[in-house]
Structure formats: C-alpha cells, structure tokens
Amino acid sequence: MIRKLKQLYIEMKNSNAYKSIDERPFFTELILIILAFVYLFGILTNTSKLIIINGSMYKPFILYGGEWWRFITPIFIHLSPLHIIMNCISLYYIGIQIEKIFGHIRFLTIFMFSGIIGNIVSFAFSSNSSAGASTAIFGLFGVFLMLGETFHDNFAVRQMSQSFLLLIVINIAFDLFSPGIDLAGHLGGLIGGFFIPYFIGVPNSKINKSKKALSFIILIIILIFCLKTGYMSNN
Image 1 (cartoon, rainbow, N blue to C red):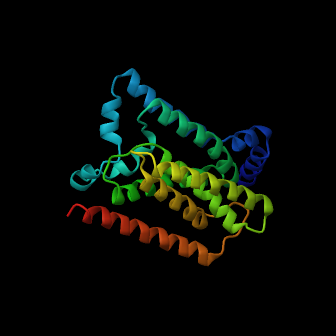
Image 2: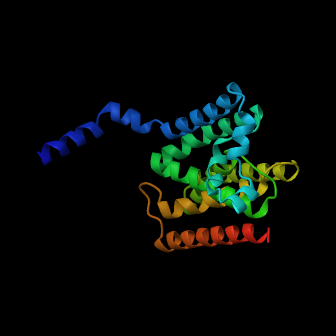
Image 3: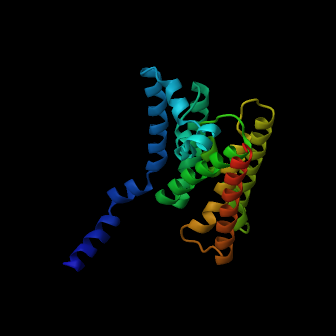
C-alpha cells in the first residue's frame, strides 16, 4: 500500500498538470488579489477610512492598545489608487521572479516577514502612521542583493544584483525628498529581505552555516532593538 502511494505521488509530481501548477506564481497572484480586494472593498462599501484606521501601522495603538497585529495588516492596506497601482506593478514583476527562484513557501516567508520587519522598524523610527506593501516589496529588492553577494562569481546574477542596487538607490533617494513616505519602513523591509534568505535557504544551493546563524542573530538583534526603541521613544 505504501509503495503504491509513493508511486502515485511520483507520477503526480512528474505529471504536466502538477508541473504547470508548481511553476505558476500563485502566491504572488494571491497576494495581488488580496490587495485589490481590500482596496476595492473599502471603496465599494465606503469603509476605506475605517480600514485604514483599523489596519495601518499606528504607534500609539500598538504602544497603549497592544495591537501587535498592526505589524502585519498594513502590508495589505493602501491609501490611494496610485499607491496600490505602483505597489501591485512592482510586486507582480519582482514577485514572479523571486517565487520562481525560491519556490512558493520561501517566497511567502520572505514577503511576509520582510513586511513585518519593515513595520517594526517603522514603529521604532517613524512618528506617523503608515500602510502599504512597500515594506515587503523592498524586502524582495533585498533578496536580489543577497543573491548578488552569495553568487558573486556568477556574472548574470551579479549584473542582476547591480541593476537592483541602482533601483534601490533611486527609490531611497526619491523617499528622502518625498514627504509622507515611510523611509524607515522601506529600509527595514530591505534589511529583512537581505538577511531572511540566508537562513531559510536558496533551493539547490548551499549556504554557509555561519552565514545562516549570523543572519538570524542579526535580525533578532535588530527586532529587539527596534521594539525597545519604539517603546522608549514614548517614555
């Protein structure tokens, strides 16, 4: 019976239908659908302001209300049509590439935790409320920097990483001269996206164990420091 199940699993995994599903960037597509649904639902039900109030990263509500879920919900909330359109376009093109390279679960892990880390850094260093998938998208930018560092001997990967480095510099420069942009959140997401792939691994590649341990320790230190800073800034 066990042999038959194993054989069935092997046949299913090698089937064209399975390969077609496995190669589809369905988490990227699912996230895009969720972003669009949340935004359109707010408009159609006239609850956009309520969604923003209840879901954005707002420091006082986290400090005094214990609303820790505000480190997660801002990823799925957008403030204007331009805001969501730009983020969705960026996520579509970058998400497809990252999901193809890392696989579905690793991609989702990088996206979500980069967004959370970005919001925690924003909690520490921003005084305003913030929302949007930008923290997570900057995390995806950070992945390309990690790939460039890890596979620096590969010319194609190195070139790709340098292209994204230029894009990151341009985005950060734009953030510096644009009022209302959550620069801290973007940088936090970028840092998360750079370090997370080291300890979750790159498929079909070996990451040095010391790099895995060091990246994990660095992220833990950053999170503790930012949470402590966020609390101390209001005391």
